[in-house]
Image (cartoon, rainbow, N blue to C red; front, side, top):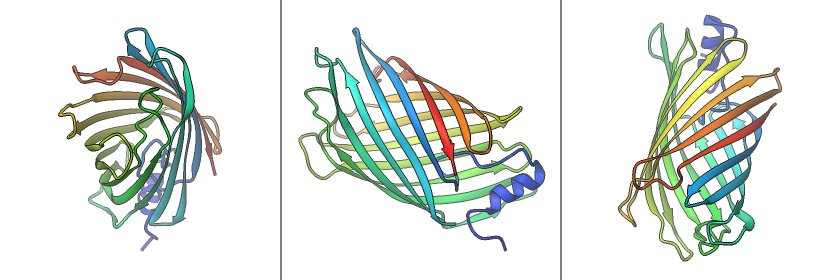
Length: 243
């Protein structure tokens, strides 16, 4: 039996050598560091810009450590504010991984995220409340085409700070490689905010290309959905270092 964390990648590679695990899949067993910039139109003439360091490291074949840091620039308060918004650390355990049939393989995941929020709600740079967020998910991979479907659910709960956070977020991700190192991704997010009784839904679309074995480049499009949306639309760009 292959070690946990390598089975799906190995099986997909056997079916098609061009297929490999992609760090745009949050349940991928890979090491990477992404440098990202995102711009959001908040409506009413206001905007938010987010500079992000987003990476992951495999501590063991079945255990992944993920980290993020966000630096905001926004004028939502009426003046331009620039500040470190938040830093998060996430542990992801892969309890099982197996081949379901000749076409599909499955990886399960559970984990816990710690979010340290340094922002100021009055300035629009964050919530100011630290949070803990358990989650679980499944990655279903087509071993012939590389299509991966990832349903996830995560609950965020604040334990200090001025903002009461209690939110359950559901996500459905579809990730498809194609062509000469390209991939496309759709990420539908449907969170329910228990504190405010709202559904700030959104959809994200990504198109990327693996430039070589160590480097990838991608662009993002963000769309706020519904009357409770937090932004109207946005764009982003990312540079991925793989190791």
